[in-house]
Amino acid sequence: MTFKTLAAAALSTTMIAGLALPASADVSTRTIRVSNGIAADHPVANGVDAMRACFDERTGGAWTFNAFWSSALGDDLQATQMLRSGTLEMVITSTSPLVGINPALGVFDLPFLFADAAEADAVLDGEFGDYVSSMMPDSGLVNLAYWENGFRDLTNSLRPVESLADFSGMRVRVMQNDIFLDTFQTLGANAIPMAFGEVFTALETGTIDAQENPYVTIDTSHFDEVQKYLTNTHHAYTPFMVLFSKPIWDTYSPEEHDILVDCAVIGRDAQRAASRALSADSLARIEGNGVAINDISAENMQEIRDAVQGVYERHADEIGQEVVDRMQAALAELRD
Ligand code: KDG
Image 1 (cartoon, rainbow, N blue to C red):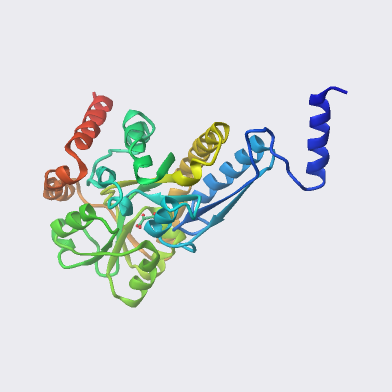
Image 2: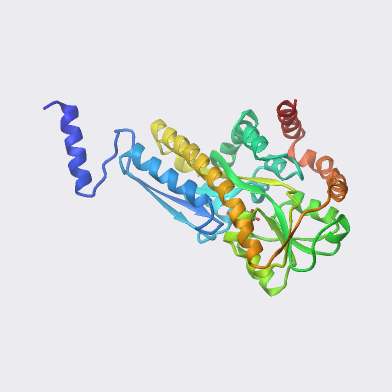
């Protein structure tokens, strides 16, 4: 019996005994914890499941992948700081709460930046996305892939928003991010920065009137149970980053690095597909729960777009002029 056959036999016997041995000498037995702010029935779970299956296949079951939901390990920023200190392996988070760590991430918060999901995918998965990801190790983070949070729409408990004037005085929760704060203040709202995990209770108690998120988040976080109106503003597209701790990454082998990245990309495709497939179902459930859905006329939407155009100029220095210029160039190339 050759060594390879003997090793394969030993591996299968060990697995039958329930002890998965690494498939390769460069792959160690690992437990990876991933923190999520959203709930376990959000389409991110489809991506996590696909990633777990990929890990099982590539490591021979040597890696255990445990997901924690609804900010159980902390909010996006808290979990991300744990990665930077090497006390947590992974977080799937919007880029928006992380602008204090890397201001360049604010580019994704500029209002009405992407026209559709195809543009977002092309920019995030292309040269520009790599450019932003290349900045992250300096902050103690490794971005494995961009997943989809999605296009953001406004819900509120006061009135249908049909024009710029309807934002006036509305207490709108925004992510902890100066660009979202400026955008909604410019629209005339009373913008209130707040961590994602606090939003439902704030809506339920009337501390805030409104929030903005994609349909699948509104649905799976049950914001529709405490809101009366949803307006299709589509005012921003937020990506998720699948971030890994750089201090922990540095203890992994090159082969394990490849497994992390390859499986995060497989998870990306599964998560985006699920997010887009479930989006219409979520909107139907939201409407079925009694929320009045409305669009804004093209003329009134143009007035809203024009009103927030100044946000780009006011935040270019903070984001980095080169970052903004490279984003604009990437979009121009796609639109030629
Ligand atoms: O962890 C999930 C959050 O990053 C995401 O839902 C953030 O869109 C978000 C929000 O409104 O805070």
